[in-house]
Length: 107
Image (cartoon, rainbow, N blue to C red):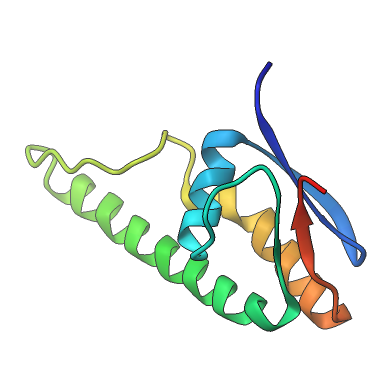
């Protein structure tokens, strides 16, 4: 079976990701990828900042690769832009923080 993450909050619709993408989001926000977990309201601002910083870094690497195609820059992940992949997750975190709700998965 294909492993997926279903990130849930009482404040917003679920965000579903394939395991690889979910692992990436959790690693970026400083969480150990695991079958279940929580990002508390208190942790959300740091998580959003980490995701936004990772997007900036990713886009800078993409830009450099476009500028210098002869330089092979390995960027982990696939061709789907990190900004597009992280967008719904960041939105879930923002909405949850505003409502004072934690984000959980696998529970």
